[in-house]
Image (cartoon, rainbow, N blue to C red):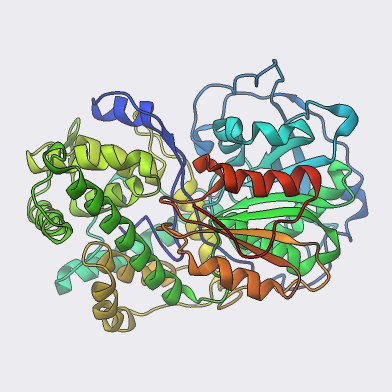
Length: 534
C-alpha cells in the first residue's frame, strides 16, 4: 500500500541507529518527517472549547514520564535534558464531542520540559511535529536538542493529538495483518491486483471501525485545534505560543482561523498548502519527491566514482532505480528475517530517505544492496515510515493518519476516477506517481464522512505567524508556504524562504532560519517578510 502519502504525505521520526540495527548495517544519525490533515464532520463549528468550563479549570498532575507505549512507538523513558531538567507527563480531559461538552470525555497525553530561566519565562511553547498521527510524547524528546535555545524562556510542551498514541489512539489491524497490508501491491496494474487493492482498503477501514468506531467521527483537525485552545487555558497561558511542523502547520492554521485572538508567537515550518484538495496535494507531492530524488541523483553524479550507483547522468541513475523497482515488483527480494522486500516497500524506503539529506547515503547504500539482492536497508526505511519497530510492533501512526485524513477530507475516489488520474501522476513522477495516484483511494471505503475539501485558515486579527518554506522539501513543496501566508491574510503570514534540502528548515541548523525564528519566539522580533536564507 502507498503509505508515504495518503493525502498530503506522511512520515515518521526515524532513528538511524535503530533503523540500521534492524537492517544489519552500519551506524548513523537521525531524521524526521511528517504531514497532512483536516477536521471532523458530525460536530461542525458548534460550541467552542471555551464552553466546557469545568474542563478549562482542570489541574494537570505532572509526573515523571513512563516509557512510551507501543502505540507511541515504544522505546525507553526520555532522558533528562542538559542541566538535568526532567521530562514530565500528564493527561488532560477533553470532550469527545464538542457539541456535547458535558458528555463523554477522552484523555490527551501531554509532555513538557520546564523553561530554564523562570524569571524571564514567556509561557508554554506547544509543538506538533506532523503526520497526522505522529506522537508528540516521543517526538519532542527525540528532537529537543534542536529546540534547546527556545527552552531558555519557554516550557517545551507537546502532546498526542486525539486518535494518536495514548490519546484515544485509533486501533485497526493486528501487527501480523499490518505486515501483509503494507507489503501489498500499491500500484496494481491487472484487474485481479486492483480487486485485491480495493479489498485491502475495505478490510483496513472495517478493522478501524470495529476497533475504534466510537472515536473515528471525532479525530479530525478541527477538534484537535479545539483541544489546543482548551490546552492553552489549562496550561494557564493568555496566548497560544506554537511551533507547527508539516501537518502541524495545517493544524496551526485551523487553530488560528478558529481562535485568531488567542494566537501568540507562532511558527509554521514545512508548510502544507491549505488551498489544495487531496488530488492537488498528492500531485504536488509527487512532483516534490521527484525533485528531491533528482537532487539526490545530481549529487551522486557530482561525486563521480565515489557514488555506488550506475550512471553518469541523473537520468541514467533514475533509469537504474525504475528498473530495479520493476524487477522487485516481479520478484521480491530478501529483506529482514523471513520478510521479503516488495516494490511498494522499496518505494516507501526511497521516499523515507528523501525526508532528510542526511539520509541520502543510506538511500545510496540501500539501492546498491538491493541491486545485489539484499533489500534489508530499504525495508528498514519502509518499516520506519510505517511505524514498525525491529521486533514487529507497530505504532498507530498509520491508523491515526488514515483516521484524521479521512475525517477531514470529503473526497472519496472511485476506482474509475483514480485510474483516470494516473497518467498525470506518472508524468509528474516516474518513481512515485503511480503510488501517489493510487493513494487517492485511501478514504474510499472509510466509514466516516469528511468535513472539507480543504481547510479554512483565514485568521484576521491574529498575531503575525512566521511561515518557513524550504525550496527542496519533498513532502510539503515550497509553494505551500506562500499559499499559507496568503490564506492566513494580510499582516498575519510572514514568509521566510530557505534554499535547502529535506523536509523542514529549522532543524537543518541553518543560522539564518534559526535566527529569524528565535528572534521572533524569544524576543518578539518579526522577521522581514520575504527574508531569504541560503
